[in-house]
Length: 323
Image 1 (cartoon, one colour):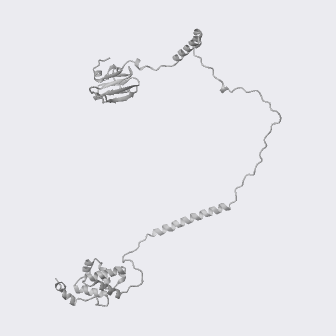
Image 2 (cartoon, rainbow, N blue to C red):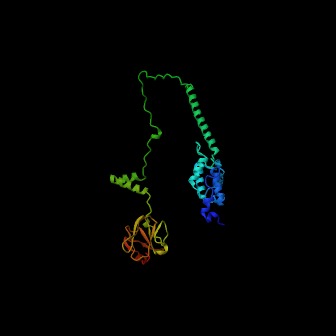
Image 3 (spheres, rainbow, N blue to C red):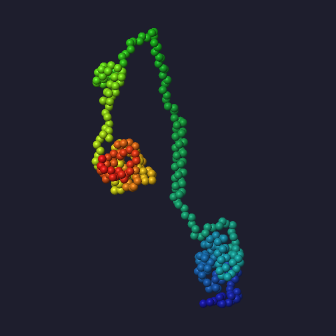
């Protein structure tokens, strides 16, 4: 229900207690609050001040309040909330509780929580450092007081024996067995060839013939028969097996160049013996080899003979009869 305060402010001005009522500012604020019909919780909600602090101000229990600047601010806000002069309330509070020459107290409810293990760690570290320093000092003192190690007495150098009179040298010794020169190897039949020719040219010819007879000859891949079906003997480059009909396989190390219809290089590589290249099924593709008999042509896996020197049309190679 609305009070006389809300209906007619003039009623409040004539009957409401002022800040001079009561023995202290706390009683004056409590009387004004009760006159307005407000509770401590109502004032706390309006001023955002804890209800316990408002009760302590009314009862002047200042030891339960924060430091003096905070308390003065609470008194001012309390008076303003009741429609009183906040500054006049602060002056009444300072008159009732004059400031003492003492440092500000910490806010109520604040507590310093320290880790008790920190001091233990610090003390332990100091003790360890002190023990290390004392140990080093003791070691240095012991080393300085210790007698020097004994040294070996100096020995007189033995006099060098001097030769008395002339010295005779004996005969030289023979060379050791390991230093003897082995008997040179003679090629069988060389002496007979030299004797039959009777000239230096004959000797050279005989020596060349003997060297050639003793040197093994590498098999010539061109002398071997051509395989009739393709068998991969190394890396196979180029297109996939299902995308090519013509396969070019090197019989010995050689270079192979494959160009497209516009002259661009599709493949250029030094092939080792056994490596192969699958040509793409495109019109106008050419294969160029610089050495005769070095590359064998396979069409559909069947031999078509050797690739001629120069530019060769892959399409024509595919139509070449078996050779």
